[in-house]
Structures are given as structure tokens and as C-alpha cells.
Image 1 (tube, rainbow, N blue to C red):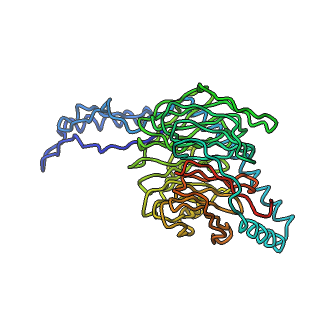
Image 2: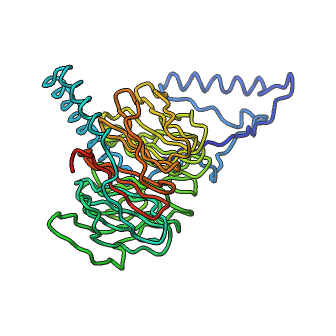
Image 3: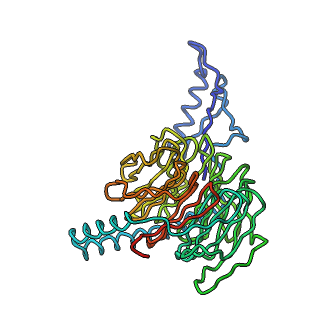
Length: 424
């Protein structure tokens, strides 16, 4: 539920000095009633008429201190609470098993190997799709496809191996601001500058090459009053979060296509929302430069993280569930530790606005208006590699779960693929 507070002004008039509240006879009468109530073992309620000089404040029927959540929102919170508890348990078991089966020396050797591999990443392929800027790129959870959204209002689905075109999802000529995939890669959500969110059914079967166009949306979510920016599916699916320039983020049930929550709290447009890997928390950030952490099980903001000197345009959680990276127009990436709810490290990552940031367990990548992609080690947050591929501002970036491929989209109307030079 959403809580709202208002200042309540007292309606009682002050009592004059030495003013007698009740007469002696009235006092004796109430005293006798108290005695009778006590002997009868029942609760005593004094007569309001005994206090003629005291006005009683009546409740204002139009005054609201909170907005009750719907029954659907309650069921959503319950499902998230149960799912996130199981997911957290699985994550902890996996971590303990990893530590048990790997010595410290083996872990260090693997990290050095990974860093050496990423230091060889370079441009592998490039694809020009449209005459407008490609604003967002996102890889499917199964690593088989990549979706690229353009300011021409369309979303282009490409093969993640060679950037060959598989399908075009037509929008409504409004700029695409965000893309996210359902956890099993069968649904793609896209956001547009007219305030709408489009849902498309899609199959990323590696054996199928489908270059046909889709001229109609499977469904549309409407509710925002301004441009919609980034989107984020809950890790278990079904629920979708959207950030908007109407200074709110909203929560949707994809199956019923209903809005479950309208969440206020930011003073300026909200640009990015991101679910924690175990699904219990969600972060929101935007042009006010503040990161808010919300507990989806309780419906409360549990932390306000301040430190950026500019607007925030990117965010990404690490798989451990307690480290969050945020990217800002101040050229810095900040790593926040949710265990302490404060900044862990601030990285001067780029010379200009950082448009996107993505985290894996081993590496972090970022894109910037300085025309570059940077790769960082997650051990000490030291830069491993700077890749120059675009001739203009880089608008977005993403990396496959396997870590073998990096993608970026740019103002130069291209999408680019980067791989290790050792692979070819």
C-alpha cells in the first residue's frame, strides 16, 4: 500500500485560564458512575455533555493518510515473498557449494584468466538497421537473440551470433525507450515515448530463422502520463516494472494486463528500475540523482541512496543480491552495498554521461556519450579494457549471461557485437 501523510490542524479551542471544565455536581455524578462501572466490571464511558467547553474533533471523511492496495496487489506481494525466500535459499546453497569445491588459489587463477580474456575483446561485427538512433539493446535470457529498440518506433530482433535480422516488431512511431525479456525469452516488453508499453510474443528457437515482420502488438499497457523509459521483468516472470518521466514507476501484471501499483517518491522523472536477482527488492533512480530501494513484499521504501552529482541513467544488480551499480551523467559509476545501505566505491568511469551499466559476477560493462564501452573487473573495480567501436554517442550496452559477447547500440544508428580476439 502507498502511504501519504498530511498535517492535521487541531480544532480544539484553547481553554481560558482558571476556566472550570465541569461543575462540582457533574464531577460527583461522573465519580458515582465510575464506581458503579467498576463494581459491574464493565468499561466506563463518560458523558460528552460533561465537558461543555471542550469541542470534539470529528474525523474528516475526505482526508486520506494512505491508499489501500488492491487484492491483486496483496496476492502479488505474497507470491513475491514466497518465491524470493526460495530463491535466496538456492543462492546461498550455491555459494556455499562453490566455496566448498574451489580453493582460494583456484578462484584467483580463474579470475586472472577471465580478466585476461576480457582484455582481448574487440569489435567483431556491426549492423546498421534504421535511419534513426538505436536507443536500447537487450540480450535474451537464453543468449540466443538480441533486441534493439530504435527511435523509429520499431524493435529489431537479431541473432546474437552474427547480428543477422530475425524479426521486426513494429510499434506506433514513438521512440523506444526501454526493452526487457520475460525470463524464458517468450515475451518482449518495449516502452515508448507516448507513455505506452507493448508486449510481444516471441520464440528464440535457435533452429528457426524468422525474418517476417509483426505489424500488431499482442497487448498494450497504458497508464503513464509521460514518456516511459526503462523496463524490468520480475525474475519469476508475470510482473513488470516501468519507469517514466511522469516521476512515477508502476507495477503491472502481464497475465491480466492490469496496473497493480503506481509508486510516487521521486521529485523528477524516473529513468531506470531494476529487480534484485532474488526478486524481493527493486531499485528506482532517475533525474533527481537519488537511488531508492523498495521492498516489494512490504511496499515500502527501505533506503534512499544519495551521492551522484547528476542524473542517473543506468542501474544493474550483481548476482550476489547485495551490490548495486548505478551510472550517472556525472561520469561516475557507484557501487552500493545493501548490507550497509551505503556507497561502497565510486568509479570515475567515463569522461561524459554514462548511458548504461550491466553487471555479471566477474565483470561490469558500461556505455557512454564519450563513444566508448568500458569493461571492469568486479574484484577491485579496475578497468580492464576500453573499446572504441561507435563513431558517436553510445546509447546502451548489454552482455550475455555466458559473458562471451557484448553488445552496444549508438547514436550512429548501428548495433555492434564485441568478442574476444582469441575466439576467431
